[in-house]
Amino acid sequence: MKSNHTMVTAFILLGFSGVIENQIFLFPIFLCTYIITVAGNLSIILAYKLTPSLHTPMYFFLANFSFVEILYVSCTVPKMLSSLWSEWKSISFSGCAIQMYCAVLLGGTECYMLGAMAYDRYNAICHPLLYPVIMSDVVCIQHIVRSYVIGAVNSLIHTTFTFSLPFCRSNEIDHFFCDVPPILELSCQDTWVNELVIFVISGCVIIGSFIVTLISYIQIISKILKLHSTSSKKKTFATCSSHLMVVTIFYGSGIFMYFRPRSSHRIGQNSMISLMYTVIAPLLNPFIYSLRNQEVKSSINNIFLQKNKF
Image 1 (cartoon, rainbow, N blue to C red):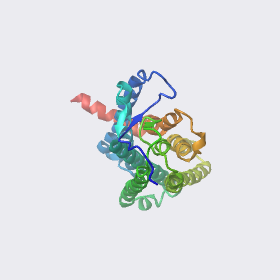
Image 2 (spheres, one colour):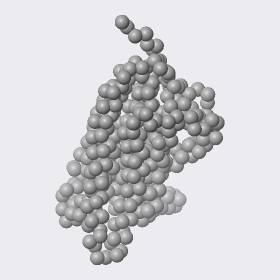
Image 3 (cartoon, rainbow, N blue to C red):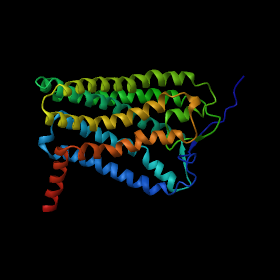
Image 4 (cartoon, one colour):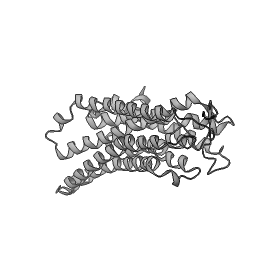
């Protein structure tokens, strides 16, 4: 007997309606956030490109990380701004699939890249003599390429499994962009296979890279505590603490979003949690890495001073 499923051709993004009734006042807030995020991360990329002294593995990863952050916010925030500004909150079926693919791809890429950045700091601090060999230019490029490949494969699996489901309960997504968990809630078919895929595949990407990051920093902290110089301890802690702040926000909210039981979901909760790793973390990235890093801050100041002279 065939099921009589209604073909969904478009979805409605509810955004923050489950938490805030009048959402229009959020538009200027998120518009300013988006502009600051793009400008801040772009300044880090320019500082790396235009300052030869920053051409080291640490800043190479940071520049690439900033590039991913710009793409990440650009695949979710503009649509959210459009939905906040107008009454037209729909997104086509294919548009939703494309947005999900891009968001999951960049999220997975960022996970691996954070792990690679932690591994880089581990080698710089724990193996300083072998560091140039371990983290050569070829190795750094390989890490970046792997991060995109892992992100692309991870995203292709999730997007394919999600959009192969029939949707008949509703076309209203309790979110501000097309993410996997809230879309699964709209399916009229049992989604245990999809949830298993999330647990296994996302577990390998998110939890795997988180474990690498955690182990790297345990080793780093252990090494720092053995240093006799107080100034060396402060400098090393300053570099690592900024990275740990981004890691905590990104992994903490991401793990809570993808690995909590479906029974614990609340209306509007998806959007609030996702804000942390899709909007807040990219916003904080340039402030944490530039304002807490004297080399980056000096490079950005020099670039602007040179432009003002002309």
